[in-house]
Image (cartoon, rainbow, N blue to C red; front, top):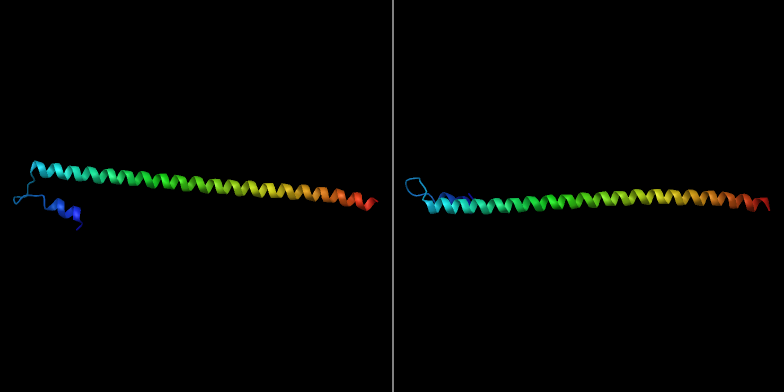
Length: 90
């Protein structure tokens, strides 16, 4: 049993009913717990969104880098072939 559960269970009076103050305290505790849970969930969602955005950016950069390297290699091959043909004719 957690401290919060113990506190909630001991708020009951001897006859099993709670006073208005007890109910008010329980409601306040529940509201606080709900606010903490909502903030935690929002933080988790923001972290997940940032992670996904970072992964997508990394993948896009890798993809662009691959195509750039292939294009540069193709251009160098074509230039090299023409230079080789030119040199061999002399």
